[in-house]
Length: 397
Image (cartoon, rainbow, N blue to C red; front, side, top):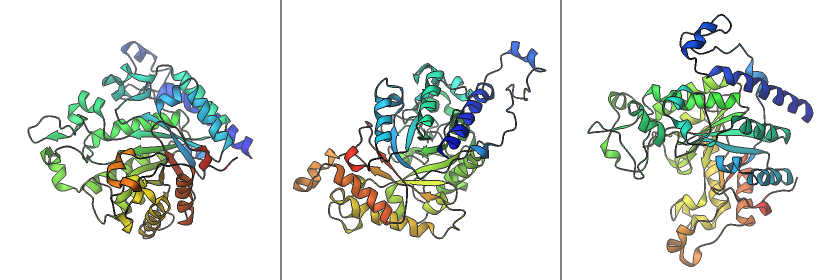
């Protein structure tokens, strides 16, 4: 059965790669003479052949790890992570396609990427190299998920200011770190992350994970002017509509859609200040991934004096609450819950925790996995920004 699935996946990858060279390729004037050879649409791009991408959808109980574009491209780090997966229960990797600085992992054929010169600085210049690594993942039965940072985008927001969030003075608004953000109310700004996601699907990814699929949290938000759309629509409706539209587009490519959300959104009723409302998100994605890192909860949250010292209690309570809230959505219409779990220590807590501060090791990481299972859930992903994972917390293969 594994070999049959692998054969389907590889054939899908090869088909995807061949089509990807056509779908987003720019057509210079000299190429228009070949219109009779190719089916060129009105925008000057070669149209895709009709394909039943549903054949390439894959069901997987994800036990995953996060992988940066740099780790994916690294001559030894990638193999180390692949070996870790082969030795343990890990069966999936969430791989950066666009990171939170706006950097792409490979040269893209998406028109907006070319227009904004995002290809001038990418992690991997050789797309064939990226594809070779993707084939290696598939050969090792690793379920690949593409992480796309959605609306936080220093690169495109600076190059296409018409797509960016504006200040009251009319200029481009920036957060505390100088980042520009695409305006979620502006449907034109949706095209860039969605087209990147479509391209990632054609490169072999089985799922698209939208991160930063929200409005800004940092900076002088009182100086933001969203225009008339901000008066007519709630932030939660804007994010819901983006995800619904993205899922419609991406299901046509045979991939699932997941979204990352703040862990504390589980405890916030109604429209949050950032557009993440749990029930609306759960009804418009296939997978919802709350970031329930115990270190990110304030002192006393859930009645726990020092949340980072009680990883089981925090994750279990959060997951049970999330399950209850999404129960209001019919089962065949609601997202499954797959949390991000903490595989790192939080030294910034030393001052506030004092003698209660702890470092994370196998016991703390495994406690979160158990808490997830005990809440009736079956999937999880570990986050470590440096991609150093605690093997002792993982079951052996």
